[in-house]
Image (cartoon, rainbow, N blue to C red):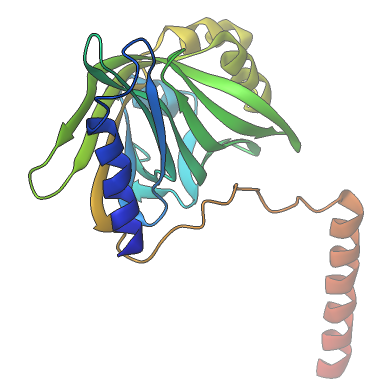
Length: 249
């Protein structure tokens, strides 16, 4: 109940700002780890067909959950949301949102790329994420986007927030990372930046998250065993096979 009260107070602070200077924006950040706060990523048909065509599959990792089959839609818990209230003209806008702990795995044959700990920068209209390629972590601007439906606040059934962004377009840096990590032909790289990858729908509701709160901790992929580790495991299996063969003899 404390979490819900905190959420209501955060939203109320956006509505009660009569004494706030008209030239300044009132910025509020709400921790939504324990609330029904989710971002749904829906890849477009063109993006799915293009990725399938070059053998790229999508898998939910961390706190992400696949919706349906085929790697088309994914749910990612929203762990924090930052909004700004301006009085002149009256407006309520999103500043940032994060989904710490959520991740997507992209694989093509034996090649893989992981994107995790997503952050939405509404000021610059960029989706940011940590990226792991070939065992190396980097910070990446993954998509630019368009705001299809600006932030709306509803009091029906309790205070809730809703927003939709679409026309997700892969940045040039992300296209380089995709092509390198997934061993995509340079001839196909321009196609990556031409695609509309789909949309993200954000909903934050004043109810406790089913299944319990998410931790909000950053996602980190499990360490990849060194080649020497594989060799030791192989020797161990070989020794076990020899022992089993002697016993059977």
